[in-house]
Length: 431
Length: 183
Image (cartoon, rainbow over all chains, first blue to last red; front, side, top):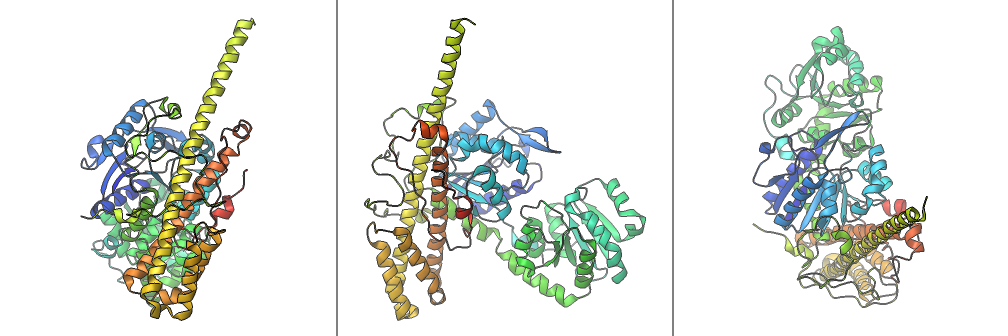
């Protein structure tokens, strides 16, 4: 199958959507599909030239306290058009289409089956409320909608009035399950370690709650170390930690992918004290895959990933006392940690890319009808309106709609057409 | 202002209205096509599911047991009545019969078992995408201006196809949550 993936965010800036697109492309390519990616980037030369096409740079726009990136205009549109024409894809898969980005441009320009994934990772509800109604005429061209979580689906339903099937984010489970640990640290050895990963200067990540819980943890298990990984302002963190906790806290800074996996394999407990706004929680799945027992706050997304508490310990969000009690409990009970790790590893399997990509391919195969032809691009500007004028059918173009025989479930008794000789799912590409 | 200016303004408004009508007609036509494609995908998959179940009953009656076999055969027969009076009910009947036979189905050869599950999943996807297309169409057609102008012509309003999805991928209450009838 020929698949065109569209990433709206700059490829060379770390982010969940970018990683998702990258991993999906890699997985599908390994399965023998032809996959190309269209994405903006800060530096064109950073893109893997083989299958990733540069869509231009995005313009940062301050919005609602953070930066939204926008990309729109005739030059980007021309790039999209060329990419669509040269790719002749069976299906185009856009990500996070409801922002003024290359994803929305693709929705406007592409003619043919479009699949969209709503991540709701960086799109805020207010932003969607503003832009949703305007984007609707183009969003309604999407034939298959995917949401990565219930939260993302709800946002979609509220602001765009459509449904979506839920297919979670994927994780390369084996890359987290096997490999080295961080030098000098082994799980189960002294000292006991608690891991935290994320932008530690964002209050919603809840590091403050964890720091508040630390004295009680240290009192019960002296010598326990808290390892903090991620981006942020180190000065600010030192001020937040204070002199008393200082010796027990180690700041690792931003980690590479390989180091992140090693970090998750090293810690005795992974703690996610987030206060709000996590759409999915890929990090929890990565931690579970790496065999780390988890103590997390009871956000909806986390509760779902941790199977309601079977695959990790859930505590009330923003409650340092409850968090401390849970951490003390888990740190003091190696058997419990082993049981949690085993349950977590099993739960993480369901999110492995091999499983997730199979579901995504099923979506592609549902929207791509046999013989429907490749995705094409509309001409610039007014062509959309000219579509109305009668034109002779092109080669492979489907038969025009007969007004007297409406599609849909039979109200009266229209004859049911026979199944095509080659059903959709037999078109799977084999290497 | 002189009448010339008013004429110009009038012409401008008319041109805008014309553009809006053309644009809406394009959208309606595109949506109609989407509904049609989504329906044909769903239709093919429903037939495919019946076919797979018929195969299972045919080849492995011993695994299913007499009662389940009879149930599934009957459900398939009802689904296969050309344009039966209530296809949704018939398809739901088949889904129910499959759910009841779940423990027996687990004893099938893995390949066949996978095929049964896989078709079920795909039916769920196709159903969701079809209802999505219907929802988008109904919401555009329900808008006051397009209703008053009867931009849809004589085309009947597409109907939702309410069947149970019954798969992990598509289990959602969305159909109820957003299936507000705008007509």
